Image (cartoon, rainbow over all chains, first blue to last red; front, top):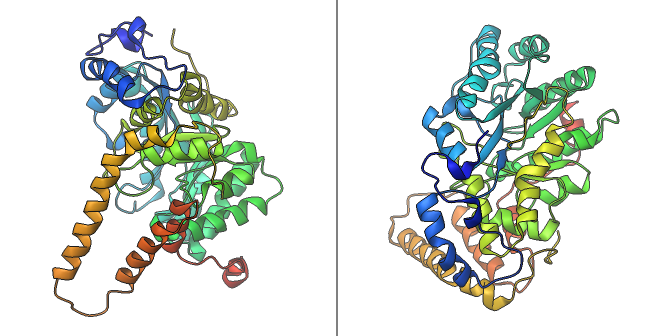
Amino acid sequence: MPSPFSRGACSASAAQVPLVSGRVGVASWFAGQRSFFIAGNCTGVYYIDPHIHMVSRTTDDYETLAKMGCVALSEPAFWAGYDRGSVDGFRDYFEQLTTFEPKRASWYGIQHFTWLCINAKEAENVALARDVIAMIPEFLDRPGVLGIGEIGLNKNTRNEATVFLEHIELAVKTNEQILIHTPHLEDKYQGTRMILDMLTGDGRLDRNRVLVDHVEEHTVGLVLEQGFWAGMTLYPVSKCTPQRAADMVEMYGPERLLVNSAGDWGPSKPTAVPDFILEMRKRGHPESLIKRVVYDNPLTFFGQSRGFRFNPPV
Amino acid sequence: MKGSCMLGERTREAVLEQEFLPLRARILEIAAGLDRLDRAVADGDDGGRRDRLENAIQLLLADEPSRAARIQLLFSRDYDEDWRTRFEL
């Protein structure tokens, strides 16, 4: 794969890549690099977006992500904006996630991985959810499938919890990794606590193979302290901003922390991870720390999935 | 909740240099939003939302760490540790 510094609109050479090794004045550093970012529009680093819903995005977005230095991404199954009516609807969706999306990503040198499930928003139909869970194993051995996700809670109901537990059962039986969605806004704290109760109540789970996503200031510590991975989602309005994500890295350290855009069909920004990279640089953090969060950590977590085959950029 | 920086121990001057204008702008947005609420016609129960906003502003003024986490909890539903019994799960 060619370097992101030599493709498309990104014309800066490797020698121009900002390598911040010490603490520098933000204004002076940014003034010096401003022309780089405006002219090149590049992050100057390879990164992986561990949570993004590319079926909702255009091919132009793949191109933009590639220019920004994105070399891989993972796409959890989620809600389409309407409730699907049958198990065959999900089968078609999983077909798209495991065949066409990897192909579309490959046109821009991006490696595409995926997670399969029925989303919590559709879990009120328990009968349909059970049919989907029974069908998922048809796809688990396909290339690029990393595990079960994004399962979780939405409004923290009994049916959602029932379907969540049945997904966990499937993951345990098939030895799959798990990616978990935590609820929105006022439901997040309650739902995260409920999810952690269910996870920690199951002694069969390897906590190092479970990612609890969409953490914020009031939930990140709970997740990390229990030994799980935690994902921070960068959204324009809800969830987390790049600045608050950088705060959490500073407060908790980079261990088991991931940053994602969760770009989808709603208000979201597929290039949010580069915004986080820029914020970390503006604060004077070393490149090694940034790379740890946006590249090394996803590789470490994904690397525990039997379906993960990654070709590093050269 | 952790409140101290493990990484990126910048000086207050460096943080202010980066944050002063954005924070000033956000405080103005809050002020203008509250003015907008005051100018609007009252039409029944607001579900306690105005009170929660004012409580959040009070939290901002408290000289304690973890303001963001405490404000998040203010806007959160309560957690019932007996939920599994209630759901019979």
